[in-house]
Picture 1 (cartoon, one colour):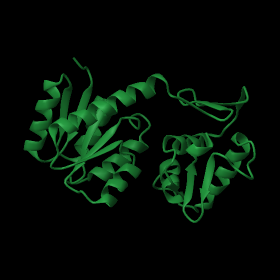
Picture 2 (picture 1 turned 30 degrees about the vertical axis):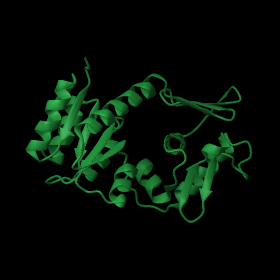
Picture 3 (picture 1 turned 120 degrees about the vertical axis):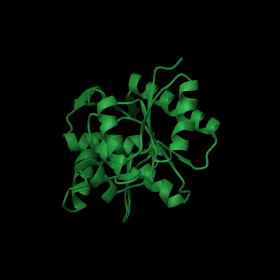
Picture 4 (picture 1 turned 60 degrees about the vertical axis):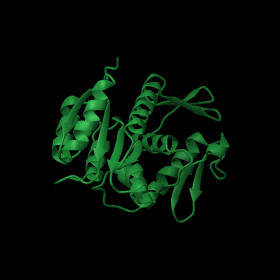
Length: 232
């Protein structure tokens, strides 16, 4: 039997009861919230292993809840699966860019939902046990906030480390300058996207063999940056 705790956030009672029944039948512990503010409180108090989050919620909507969770260092790593009636591609992309780990559209198959829940929890367990990454001659331990290049420790500022981490965690995806500012400096940051360019330049000098012709951190002109998986 499973010991994981899942927070279900939805204002449709029949949906909540359906998901809760199936979670408990599979050995999970289920807790529920019917609005965004209640969801944030439960996330902080209960620290669930996974959050199933509807977008269309009264008060604080699901996207805003996702933003707040990802900004809070105590709960920012909790995996989130967005569940919504919205099926448009842009809605899915927005949810994923805000930090959701997966996306399920209503009406959904209970069997598919349970499979996604198990997959996300399994992946999270693996990442928690072995939260490291290496590329070229660089080794990173995300738990220890350590970067080693050619066997020697590389001193990164907190923002440089966070920038490298988000690029690697989203490797292969183009991340806009605005998104990087929001994720690392916060949604209240008032400044220029040039801040990102400066930090990328310093980061390249520290981890790339040739910062003038970077192999891993790729510039996407007019948009932002991407960690280049092809360079590995």
